[in-house]
Length: 126
Image (cartoon, rainbow, N blue to C red; front, side, top):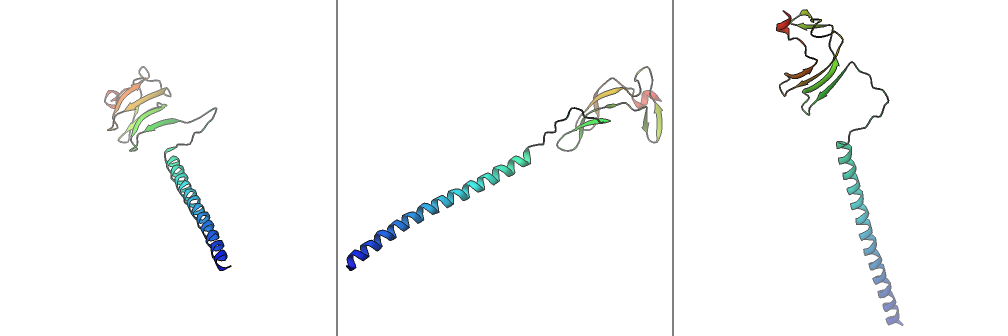
């Protein structure tokens, strides 16, 4: 009678150990999957820019900046007058129409490298 009871207990303990190992493996797999999803979600949220869909976008100026915050391009409207050192210079009507749209590109130093339509420099306006 004791041998049968010991064998029954041994079988029950071995089944419980096998079941315990399966639960541990499943728990480890669930934890690893959760960590993986958190890491993937965090990395995507840092790199993904939100997409804004609109039929109309209005602005006085569109500025393109590089990763260092330097202005690399600008789409704007030429102002009615340019200012330098507190002095105002009226634009030449034959070269630039005040209020005309302009596209400008700048180098890494912030110097204008290309503009369309061309506008007079401050030295030309003196």
